[in-house]
Length: 92
Image 1: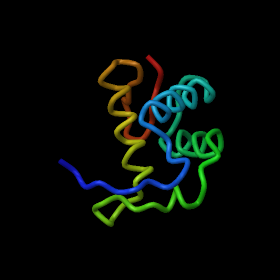
Image 2: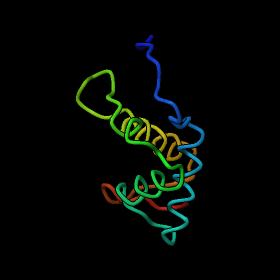
Image 3: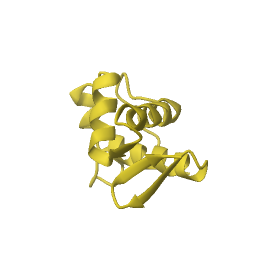
Image 4: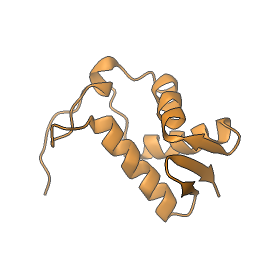
């Protein structure tokens, strides 16, 4: 299984990220870019710099970005959102 590490205080759960991703898309009129979604979630959940700068185990990306990608993938698999254009997400 993957590496274990201590997450910074206030790091959102996958469920929180999924819920707020859906809310972000709704807030933007049913369509939002990846950046708009992240900006909404950062503001809504009041994510700290520590959370935003916490590196993924690969050392190449931030863990929050990795988890946000998984949240969108999960929502897409549940047929709650779709992406017809790269980086643009839409409510179903």
